[in-house]
Image (cartoon, rainbow, N blue to C red; front, top):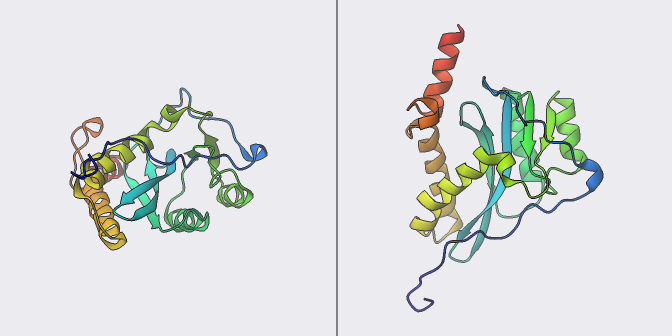
Length: 196
């Protein structure tokens, strides 16, 4: 397989290492009706493999509209890239609840302070409960299987360009069965029109 450059597709590094238990918050979404934009944002980080290493992608997804609200790609796992992206997104919109796993990027005082100062309630998946963040995990799976694994980006620049294109297409071109065949952006617009 090595000679033919064939690789198996499987989950990579585990990025959900808990930092400090005292920063963990309960899961608030069980039986919650998510029926409008900015009710719940899901956030998470995944690795993006390319020929000579990894980049890391942080996304914010609105669970009602499936829209990628904001995202950032980083060369390192320093928590600042997550906080920077969240600050940028919170300048324009605010969710009622934000849901993450119990990884170190979300179980720290800086993250908790940022959410509290913006009036956002914090929800965290149960330990080992990937389905608690199903919409975010599904987006990562789709990105990897529809773009990352098949395009074999060689350089970080190619990877970032590929991610940018995929997310733009995801929000503006790709229809979703759960949205009645609309794209996330079109569904958002339809919701605003009906509300007006």
